[in-house]
Image 1: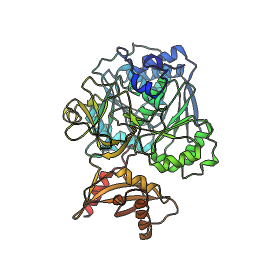
Image 2: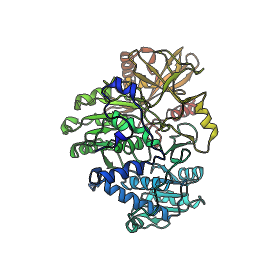
Image 3: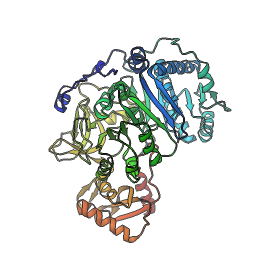
Image 4: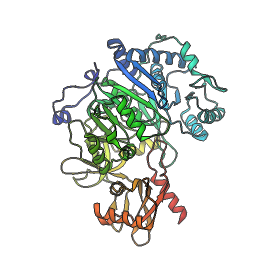
Length: 552
């Protein structure tokens, strides 16, 4: 069974019907753990909810009944820490199944979860705890993570509890022992939120400045009605794998709310270092039917001998996080017969642009506006642009804030007012649409390159470059030039078997000239072993620009 019909229609007959008639219902005082997970446990307690495995071969299978009991135990442990509704808790739990139990437990208490990556260093943890006034930290019990956390906790006097998974450690509460001893009954009623209650904070990737705290309310999960059912195309028969770590907002997009509302089984593969061959093995072994990963992972997967794996169970593939290059789309389709459906959004939102289950994907396009939002493309004067013209992707909020859109930046009125202005939420992302209504990503407003009167989006040049077999990844930036204003620079990570050379630079430049408009070709090419990325895996073009400025 699935609970989709409680919140929106399940029988949209066509794309036109979906776009014209989509609507959704928010129950008063909605709390995902009570109104979705506990309902599954009541109505279908034996229905499979999660398959968890890791790179060491451990495996656990959980039903909805299991998850209710475990989330109640987690809530009772957290209550024992002295936590109260409205208090933030920092979670660095990687892809351990305990993350889901703890996150649901925090919802029961009305606490604010702060999912974070395990890659945080001491200063990163201190900043997040102090900025959010977090009252507890829960991390995985690994030496590096615990050492950073222990030192950070000593500098944070506002903490009530610091705990870790994996057994007793000095300076930490033993979460495993507390969890084993905790009752699996509901000792207090589940928290009923109001419109101002914060459920979750995400620290943005910090491509510029210190990370901001994106606040989401308890209705956030219903913003993912589109995600699970109409983008991932899931039902209760689906086994869905999204690769994201729990510290990244893509985890909420791909392995939590929308997928469980649709009744799907979450397939969680816990790994430390991505290996394309291992990922393909998981798809084959567990007969995964739906797969979602950022383009970077697809790029590495298509470099493997994919025809050696049995991927016949795979029915659907999706991507988000950064634009998908057409060459990757075409190669994956050639290997699997499955077309990748792209979507686009932010940590501040759920999918804004989406290639729905009824649509024919257009390589290079992020799809069409989700009917969940009222999307407009605006110029610098907040006037709508015409078809074929670039504009900033914005949400019209004059009639109210839809479920899934951020409440604003936590304790930061200045930055909140920068994005919510004149009746619109401004994403800062530049896109354009063609005559068929498909939207195409150009780049962040500050990433667009202006050269000799041309405006060049980094994605279009990156797409051209990665279609060459020598290129695994690349980043396009603008370099100041006295004659042209800026020239295009490519920072390139090469595939195995290729060696940097002037000849290869020339070959790549000519390749770009052949596959896209010649004025876009990179006049400067630098080969690197790896590209600078945020902790969520997004390429940091601003770091490349800063490094170039320092060299000048």
